[in-house]
Image 1 (cartoon, one colour):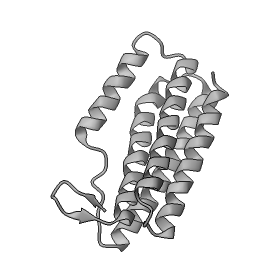
Image 2: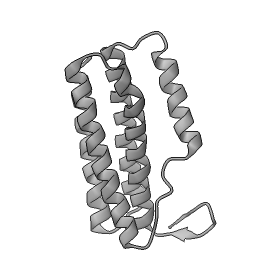
Image 3: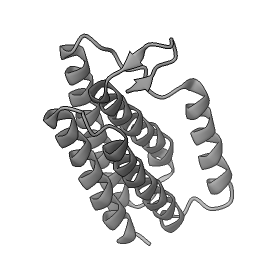
Image 4: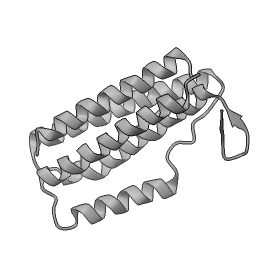
Length: 151
């Protein structure tokens, strides 16, 4: 069991679903910052498709949490600011498709690692939560490969 910011203990299921929400919000927010920089039409179309998938998985996680009487906190304002600053620093001199794709591939790689950690950290999550986390992991792995096509 994990402890939330109020000191209450959360079960593995809630913790795993909250991890899905945080991961997908990070993906959506990152793409919100990157999409306006994208100049290549095929690249931009792929980014929009990926944003929609993050949105769908995020919605599924929120529905699962709500069904259990829980509500996700999502990405903190500080985390959002850190992402914006990181993107700004890495794109200040290079907004090329190659640079953007490389950044996103690295982010997807970190997302895969986060999914793997959650699966180990929350072994008692329900099969539904585990399946959703696996869906997110598979999507992140696929996205990493797709970003490689734009390098």
